Image 1 (cartoon, protein in one colour):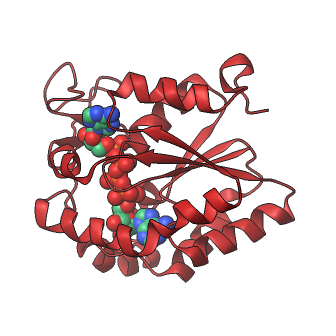
Image 2 (cartoon, helix red, strand yellow; image 1 turned 90 degrees about the horizontal axis):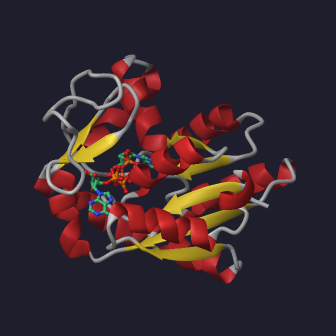
Length: 218
Ligand code: AP5
C-alpha cells in the first residue's frame, strides 16, 4: 500500500516517515528532499523549483508530477511525504496508482498552527539523509552533528518565520482541501500531531492495522 503523509509544514511528516521507514518495510519518498537534491545537483528542475521554494510557494504541478512519475517506478510499499499537495497532483497520482492496481491511504497530521513556527525555526536537518532534529523537542546528542553519520546539520533557508507564514498560507489554500478529498473517498486516517514524537508514531501504527504485525500494510 501507498501511504500519503498529509499535513502542514512542521506537522512532523518527515520525522514520522523516517521512523516508519526504519521500522517497517516502507520507503520514504519526500518531494521536498527530491527538490532540494535537484537544487544541490544544479539540475534544470532544481533551478526552476528554487524560486518557488525560496518564496514559500508550491512548485508548479507539471514539474512535480513529471518528477514523481519518474521516481515512483514500480514501488509498492512507500510513504509519500509532501505529495500530493494540490487536487491536480492528487488526481494525477490516483490515475498513476490505478494503472498499477495500487491504492493509497492518507495519514492526516492534525495540529494547531501556533506550534508550527517554533517547530520549524528550531529545526536542524541532515542534508545527506533528510533526517531532522529540533533544538528543544528532538535534539541530537551533539549540537549541530547528526547522530547517525557524524556529519554537520544545517538549517533550511525556508525555515525563517516570514517564509513559514507564506508556506502555511499556501498549505491552507491548495493542500488542506485534500483532507476532504481523501476523507470522502474513505481513504484517510487522522493522528493528533500535537502529541510527542513517540506517541504520534504509536497512533500511526495503531491506525494502520497490519503495519506492526508483519512490517507490511495488509
Ligand atoms: P517540504 O520539504 O515537503 O516541506 P513541508 O511540507 O513544508 O514540510 P516540512 O518538511 O517543513 O515539515 P514536516 O511536516 O516534514 O515536519 P518535520 O518532521 O520536519 O517542502 C518544501 C518546499 O518544496 C515547499 O514549500 C514547496 O515549495 C516545495 N514542494 C515540495 N513538495 C511539493 C509538491 N508536492 N508540490 C509543490 N511544491 C512542493 O518536523 C518539523 C520540526 O518539528 C522538526 O524540527 C522536528 O524535530 C519537530 N517535530 C516533529 N514532530 C514533533 C512533535 N510531535 N513534537 C515536537 N516537535 C516535533
